[in-house]
Image (cartoon, rainbow, N blue to C red; front, side):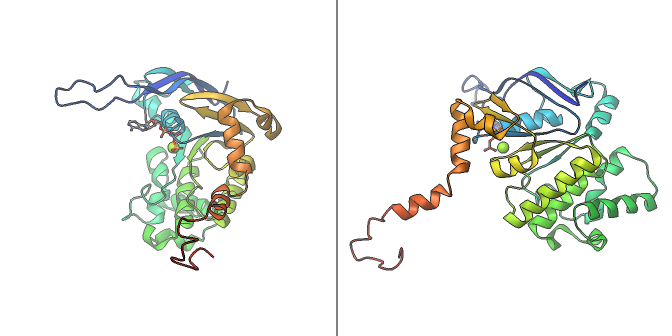
Amino acid sequence: MALLEISRVTHAYDSAHDFLRKPKQEPQAVVKDVSMTLEAGQCIGLLGGSGAGKSTLGKIMLGLQPPQSGSVLIHGKDMYTRDKRTKKQLRKHIQAVFQDCYSSVNSKMTAAQIISEPLDNFERLTSKEKKYRIGEALDMVGLPASAMNKLPKEFSGGQLQRINIARAVISNPSVIVLDEAVSSLDVANQVHIISVLRELKTQRDMSYIFITHNLKAAFALCDRWTVMDQGELCGSFSTKAEMKESEEVAVKQLMDASLSTRPEFGTIRKHRPFYADSGQRKGAWT
Ligand SMILES: Nc1ncnc2c1ncn2[C@@H]1O[C@H](COP(=O)(O)OP(=O)(O)OP(=O)(O)O)[C@@H](O)[C@H]1O
Ligand SMILES: [Mg+2]
C-alpha cells in the first residue's frame, strides 16, 4: 500500500462575490484531475512555474484544503474523513515546512515550545522525555541544546528554518511536505538543510514532497520529479536524462531556466541603458 495516494483530485477556489453575492465569474480549477502516489522513503520533487497549482496541491495533501473532488489517502485512510479521531491520527503522519520561516512560528514562543508542538498534540510524554526529544531534534538539524530557550527573533532566517524542520520531524511523521522550504535561504544554508533532509531520509526512512522552483535543490534531494502546469501533471521522471528529453513545453522551460547560467544578469549586461550614449549618469553602468 502506498504511503500517500492522491486520486483524481480537482480543486477550484471560490471566486470573489459582488455586492449581490453573485459570483463574478465561474471559478477556474487550479488543480485538475491530479493523481500521484508516494512510497515510503521516497522523495518527489513537485516542480512547475508560478501559479501552476503546487502549493494548492500541497495544502490538499496536508489536509488543509479540502478538494472539490477526488481523494487523499494516507496509509490507505481518507485524509478528509469526518471521523475526528482518525483525522487527528492521520495528521500525525504528515507535517509541513513552508517558505516563510517567521510567519510559521509564534514569535512569543521559545524554540522548545515551537518544536514540541507535535509532541503536545500527538504524544503523552513526561517533561524529561520531552526535553530529551527536543534536544535530539535540535541536534538533528545542527543546532545546540542551548537554542531551546531562545525566541524566534534571536535566530537568523536559516536557523529559524531549522527550528521549523525540527518541529516537522520530531514526531517521526511518515511524510513531510516542504513548500519552497529552502528558497529564501542563502546557498550555504540551502546546502546544509538539504544534507540534513537527506540524512533524515536515510536514517528515519522519511518521505518528502519537495515543492520548489529550484531544480538544483530538487535534483540534490529527490529521487523522482513531477512537473505541474496550469493545474495538471504534465510529466513524471525518475532520471535527469528522462527529464531533459521531454517534449513538454513546461518541462523544457523549467530545464532551460535552470540550465542557463544566470540569464537575468546576462540580459542586463547585453542591454545598454537609454542614457549610456547620452553622457548622463556616466559611470553608473560601467
Ligand atoms: N486562497 C486562494 N484563493 C483564491 N485563489 C488562489 C488561492 N491560492 C492560490 N490561488 C490561485 O490558484 C492558482 C495556483 O496557485 P498556487 O499557489 O497553488 O501555485 P504555485 O504553483 O504554488 O505557485 P508559486 O510557484 O508561485 O508558489 C493561482 O492562480 C493562484 O492565484
Ligand atoms: Mg507555491
